[in-house]
Image (tube, rainbow, N blue to C red; front, side, top):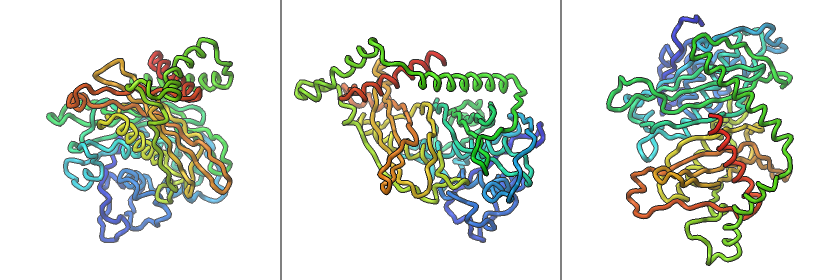
Length: 449
C-alpha cells in the first residue's frame, strides 16, 4: 500500500439476503479491493466461517479474502517469513462504514429497544475489525510463506463516551499503534457525527484497544511480527502510551507471581466488608434494606459453541464471547437496578484459553459492587466469568473474566421518586477478597491514567 494512499474504507451492507445466491450483485469496488475481486457467490462455504454472525464480519472477510484463503489453506511445507518488514500505522489503517441513514435493514439489525446501537453486537464487530487490521500489518503479501496465526490476547479497555444512535451513519476507524516482538496493539475509534449537524467534527463516541499475539501456524510457538514505524506526532504519542501499558502489564504479572500474604491492614478491610454480610446470613430480619448479598444478584446462562461462531482458525470468536458476556451483564444490571442500565466501559480482559466449536460454555454473572458517591451517576460493576465445561472429563476451566461498568439514566431515576441503588455486600471471605481486588485495580488504573 502506498504510504500516501487513503486508508481502506469498507462499506457494511445488511445480510438479509443469502450472499451465496448467484442472483446477488457483487459487493461495491471498495469492499473488493486488495485482490478480493471475486464475488461471495464464488467462495466455498468452508472459507466463510461465521459469516452470518455479523454484517461487518461478512464485509471484512470479503475485503481480505485472498489473505484469509491462504491462512485457512496455506501452502504445504511453506517456510516462515524470512525478513521482517517495517510498516507504518497508515498501512494498516482501515475503516468500516455503517450506512444507517439509508440502509433500513442494516439499521434494524443493529437497533436496540431504546433506538441506540446494540453494544454487544458492536463489541463483536470491533474484534473482527481489529483482527483484520492485525492481519494487514503482519502480512508480507507473499503467497509462498506460511501465514501467522493471530489470536486476541486481551482487550485493554473499551470506553463509551457518548450514546450511539442507530439513525445516523457510523464509522469505525482503526490501525496498529504499537508492536512488540510477537504482539500487536490495535486502537479503534467509533465515530458518529451529532444528529443536528452531520458535518460536525469527528469526535469518538467509543474507543477500544485490542492486543493480538502471533503464533507460528505450524509450530504454535510465538512468532515475530513486522516492525511498526510511527510517523506523525500523534502516532508517536500513541506508540509511547501503548509501550507504557505493555510494561505495566508485565509488571503486574511479576507482582501477581510474587504476591505476599495478606497484611493486617487488608485483613481489617476484609472484616469490615464482611460485617454487613454476616448480618444478612445470621440475622436477615435486621439486615440493611438498602443492601443486598452479592450471591442474590447472580444470573447465568449456558450454550454449546456452534460452527457459525468460529473464526478463520476454527476457534470461537473473541468478539462472540464479548457479545454474549455483555448481554448477560446488561441483563444482570437491569434486574439489579430495576431501571434500564446505560453502558459505560469494559475493563481489561485477558483471553486465557481458546474456546473451540462444540465446547460447553457457561457464563456466570454478578453485581460485584456499586459506587454511590455521585448520586447523579451511580456505578454498577458487573463481573461475568466464562467457563468451558467438559462433562465427559468432569472439568471446568475459566476462559475469560469480564468486568462491565453501567450506570442508570438520570431521566429514568427522576421518574422514580426516592430511587436508590443498593449496596452489594459479600457473604464469604472469597467474595470480599474479589471485591477488594477489583476496587484496588480500579483505583490503580485511575491513578495511572
